[in-house]
Amino acid sequence: MPTITQKAADGRSTIVDLGDTVDVVMTVREWARVASLGLSTAKRLLASADVPRKTLLSRGRIGIATSSHNAWVRDRTRP
Image (tube, rainbow, N blue to C red; front, side, top):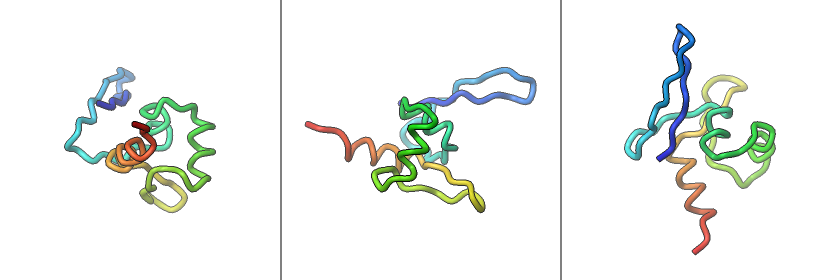
């Protein structure tokens, strides 16, 4: 199960389990961490066609939903 680390306002880090039933939209940085990619590699992949579906969070800011990430991983998994 994918997890992300979130920083609270007081500076403490908390590990959050994304689970299988919740569809969370991750930032590019969070998605890179979940996908075990470097940030520059994640950005390069996002500029190509072979990436999870992107979610427009605001003008100029995108995210990746956990469901899109999971489908992308399934599509890339070889038997």
